[in-house]
Amino acid sequence: MDDGVCVLPLLGLPEVRTGDDLSALLLAAASRAPVHGLRDGDVLVVTHKIVAKAEGCAIDLRTVEPSAFARAIAARWDKDARQVEVVLRESARIVRMDRGVLICETRHGYVCANAGVDRSNAGAPETVLTLPRDPDASARAIRAAAARIARVQIAVIIADTFGRPWRAGLTNVALGCAGLRPLRDERGHADAHGYVLGVSVLAVADELCAAAELVMGKLRGVPAAVVRGYAYEPGEGSAREILRAPETDMFR
Amino acid sequence: MDDGVCVLPLLGLPEVRTGDDLSALLLAAASRAPVHGLRDGDVLVVTHKIVAKAEGCAIDLRTVEPSAFARAIAARWDKDARQVEVVLRESARIVRMDRGVLICETRHGYVCANAGVDRSNAGAPETVLTLPRDPDASARAIRAAAARIARVQIAVIIADTFGRPWRAGLTNVALGCAGLRPLRDERGHADAHGYVLGVSVLAVADELCAAAELVMGKLRGVPAAVVRGYAYEPGEGSAREILRAPETDMFR
Image (cartoon, rainbow over all chains, first blue to last red; front, top):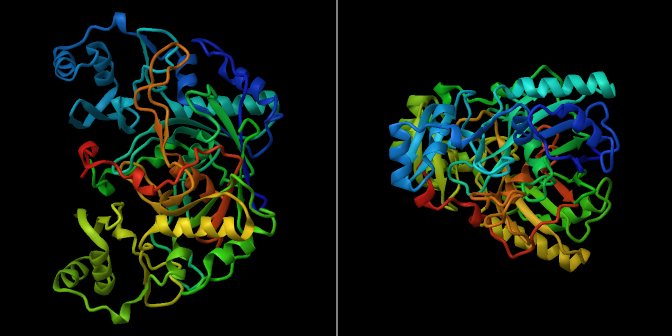
């Protein structure tokens, strides 16, 4: 790591469609420049959107019958009632609802705007994408394919861009992971003056996603990137470890 | 950027003390491997802690007289009343206060635990460090020194690791910046299917800090890193742009 960490875009991925073999597409793109083939220890960060497309998470809004609640929200805030209906179906809990913004806890436990339901880059008009059903499983499948086909041991993270309280702008964060421990725990270690570090648990999976976003981006059409040279802690890993326990969450 | 982005640690920085010429120390460390000298377009990310030390933000707790309020909080939650007093002095507003945790808005407008007051790596026993007074100004000074002494046009970000609601673990975020626009605004652009992106403002300054953290870390004792190859949008820049406007903040 003293020689640094590199973040490389996966270029030349085709438009992903339902039923595509996403692992094969990713491995083919990774075989080309600038990645030149995956290596042991690489972290492959994949935007959730191509995972959701491959897994058939696109919903044609023309097939959605909005509930009375969805219609009421949509009428008040000038939204598409069918899209609001999908958001409500994807939500386990509404965390805040104000000025037309819905901050939802998804069935996975993530808290984000609109339960992650999004219309941009959904692949077709009148269509929204939900988050993948089980992003950890999606990550495990790609990791297993890399081991089987390319004979490399890598870590895989499925990412999305989330907003956050207090700070403007979105950052890329982890929804699912495989092959690495998403948190780096420095607690119990002492600093150079013997002071024991109290709360130093770093969300490295989220930091890896943020680093990857620097070469990705919705407009550039680059939906995946490789982080090379980061000595992550290997492990089965699950992005559920990044969910804050309710008893330590002061903003439920 | 199609060739990727690299993150390089600044190695060999000495322990920073009050009154040190931090810019000179950073430039000397950057002249060595693995950075091999700063280049135009580099982003230098510096942990706030060495900035605060150089600027004399260390407070000897033996000189602090806690208020009755600080003493009451400390007694109830088994904390150091003098340290609680410093936290209160650094706070413009208490956002949440529960189970011994103080989530504060600092005088700069940042929301974080304990107003950023920290005892780890403070440089001496019985000592806490506050955040730098004006992190944008600190970043501007380092950027100006790089232009004057090393003849390079770089961007500089002053960073700290903050917790966040809903997600476990800390991530590195920007407290001050100079030379780059901290937000990348993709609104108004259309995706490949003509759908206009609605809320796509990316907090790139925070993502650059997160990327830098991958080679930094409290235990490794690496307080700065260079991100090379990221085509940021040049601008005077201020981390205040990352402060969410109160009217869009649902978690005040």
